[in-house]
Image (tube, rainbow, N blue to C red):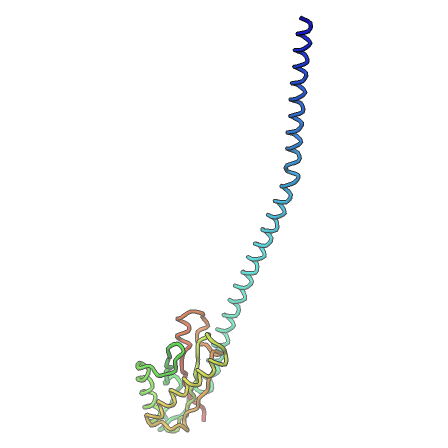
Length: 212
């Protein structure tokens, strides 16, 4: 009987010791787990958040710069148009008639083309009639392009567009000596926008009455 009690007590002690050791191992594992992975995850999250914040800040700076450039372009265009109107708004024609630049309408071109469109021949016909009625008036034709392409390419294209209008007016009897041409390429947009609607407006010939 005493032998049975001793054996039973020994079993109880062994089982208890096993439970204690198992609990300690689990606690040690719990203590060790966060100390390895959590700081690494937190540092990665902080770096990701920092990069995203920098990206958003850069995007906002770029949007603000674009808005500023657009406003400056609009203001510069308005200033040039005002100054131009002061110089060439009123040029005497025959019999005391006032010949204004506003009487000459712009013509427009298809993308990367410089041939006169059929719908624009009517505008040039009317302008030729006005010029033939006012032989003392000289004009300048400004060739313009949209913003796509290099500056050098657009300067050449703008000159071809101005020359096309000059040649058409010449064919209707307006002397070449009364017509000057110049190309501004893409440097003088009528519309500072960056879409097809703006580009279509900027592909044009603009006509200016020259002061005597």
